[in-house]
Image 1 (tube, helix red, strand yellow):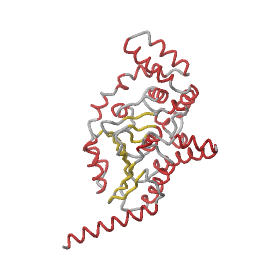
Image 2 (tube, rainbow, N blue to C red):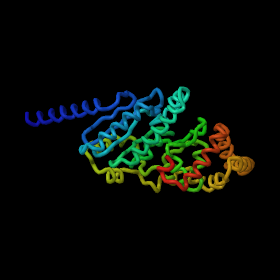
Image 3 (spheres, rainbow, N blue to C red):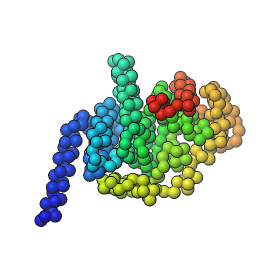
Image 4 (cartoon, rainbow, N blue to C red):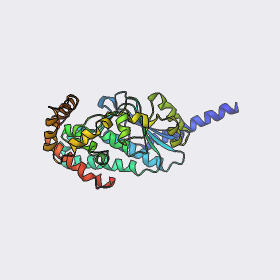
Length: 319
């Protein structure tokens, strides 16, 4: 009886803590923020919009972060998504577009909010983990990149397709793009080409490749405040072996040769020359030209300039 009573008391305390938390957070059904023992669990839940991150979602997550930073029980914050296709397709661009129709200042305020949100995660004093087994794009990349640990499942996919939307890779991702091997960052920023976890590992976008069937093990371990670094080092796949599977790595010299050109026009000219050469290179060059033709010409020029500028800037300056 005594043991059973203790369990019930703990269950009641846990329920009360979560009720207090939910009462303190802004209302938003598109993301859940739960305290589960020693873990702050954030689940993106906006499948109808591919988990695009809205103003209300950012408000709720930011409020949870502020509460949990002072909560001695919380050891780790963890982001996840139950959507099998999209961890997050990015910030809600439609929301920004609609805001701009009403007032340019409203749209600018939303961009400022996004960048402040990223900086909040960057400066956080507790481990912030993202477990990803789907597509992460745009603002979703911004949300996850500033955490301390990114875990990629077998279906992980990363991309920054902003130039195809008439935008450019923002959310401080140009800071990462500018520091990738060779000129890979320009290639990915200009084309919006998606990459898999082998490429991301090679490019330094993540450290941990762990199949999705072990995600619940990670979550449970964080509920019990198991030291995150030793846990992930124990169960991660061999990074050296996985990097050898990277298609980007195998094409690094070619990518650097093309995207080291200083202007969009010269990059395109170089690609056009490749279309009449080696069959494999020609096929690749044609596909890249197609990606560039789908993008806004102005966005391409801004993206190229932004990545070049970011080489000499710190993260807060890029934001």
